[in-house]
Length: 96
Image 1 (tube, rainbow, N blue to C red):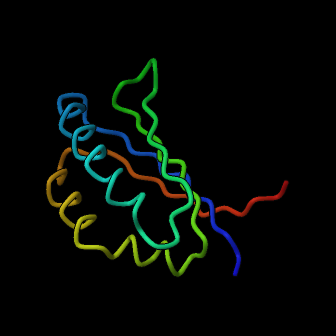
Image 2: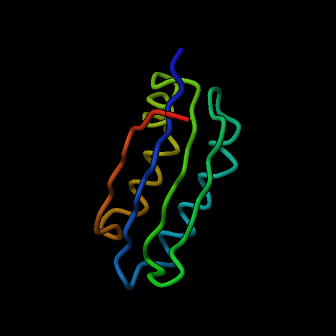
């Protein structure tokens, strides 16, 4: 099984930063209990408060896909619809 690193960049609309942050924070305890989740860290940019980054480590891409298809992630998407200007997800592998 190949481990997977995810870097997710989320850019909130300037007037929706607090909403997006609150919804992202709700994901933390649930995701950290998921099978295959090794690390799930949320960061907020010091200069651009609406820029959030998740740094994630998963046991496999398949287990990450289960996370991506979870009902609580769908709830997050619904709650933040129109509040996120940009979302970029990079699937990466650890080199050293």
